[in-house]
Image (cartoon, rainbow, N blue to C red):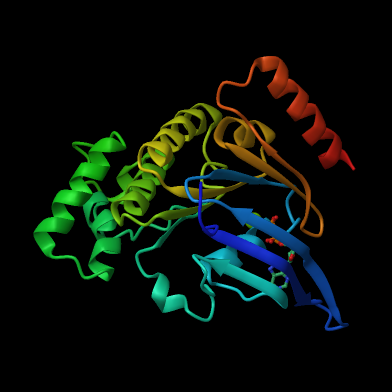
Length: 251
Ligand SMILES: Nc1ncnc2c1ncn2[C@@H]1O[C@H](COP(=O)(O)OP(=O)(O)O)[C@@H](O)[C@H]1O
Ligand SMILES: [Mg+2]
């Protein structure tokens, strides 16, 4: 893809104060990273390696201690409001409002963007149907399975038409069968709709299934491997990448 990257980290460090108040520790250490428009990037690493910290900086929920994060050339933290409607987020926990139906939850993001009622209703219906939830529009979250609730939050993310999707371990609380199915549907939707997606995971299989590009982090967050995974890579090629990743994560 040509032009400026959608997401850029330049020498990004993030320090947190230690819980005991004795100084600080480094969660992200001098990360340089460019993510091009239309890329589906899996950010992989063990728990505690700084994935969510990086994620939060892309989403504008946290600021680097040193260096710069840029999304579409702008500072996502300082210019947070200018990203309205451009970034959609899916978390591990579906974060649905329990007092709103599936439809009402998908409409929420569109309400916040000030879209007219008829348009948001139609759009929400279309996206629920694409996620296999036609007929469940009026169900409340408590009546839906974990997988279905996560489908609603994915529908909500796509319905806003944001060009950038950020997902922080969205399938890790689901059983493997459900996760596998959603993973496939998710990556197809990302590609069909030309989204740029950053998908955080601690699962090697998930990263290899999803990513056009897999970035492996070591702790504190530093890039240990950054590799493209061709969609038609052979099993043998995938096994070789997996072995390299396993070796890094075992360090
Ligand atoms: N707000 C915070 N204050 C202090 N420490 C934090 C904060 N957020 C994360 N950390 C610490 O930073 C490290 C990286 O955390 P995190 O980014 O959540 O890792 P991951 O998402 O890869 O599991 C961990 O040691 C975590 O305890
Ligand atoms: Mg995390």
